[in-house]
Length: 93
Image (cartoon, rainbow, N blue to C red; front, side):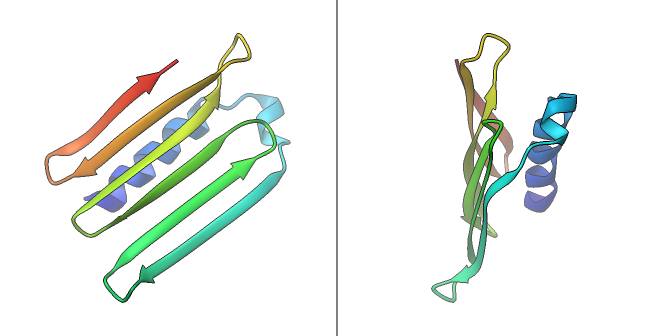
């Protein structure tokens, strides 16, 4: 369930992409798994068009955030928690 929630969040980011975004360059991609031997993970991605994705958690829950460039040039920040009760986003503009 949590894996599908993370995939959903990434699809939301992809759906908001323009043609210029498809030409964007990857600046950072970090994926660390099984931190401390407890099934923890940490994922971070940054792209030169302003998109950033961060997520961390374990089998019991994920918390993360992503930033999307808004039409007015300001970044839109979405923070979320995904757990057994569902995906809970919070939008900051």
